[in-house]
Amino acid sequence: MAKKSVASLQTGSKRLTKAIKMVKSPKSGAYTFIEQIMAPEEVNDFLKEK
Image (cartoon, rainbow, N blue to C red; front, side):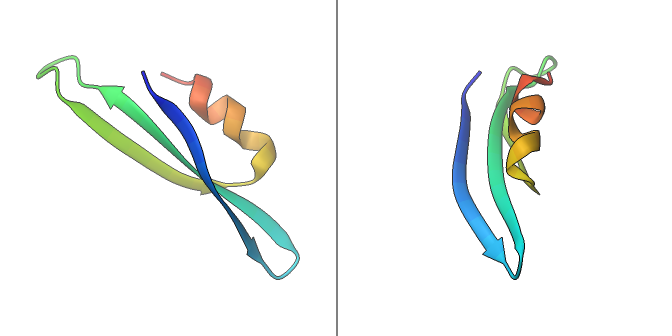
């Protein structure tokens, strides 16, 4: 499974990060990408989830 934090976004006083995770589908075997914008502290928890 590939994991990568790709961007740091800054809006006003909030600092945000866009994380992209590649997940393999159990049914078809194809890979899909899940993108989410979150606080930098939450990125590791997001990437550890299956």
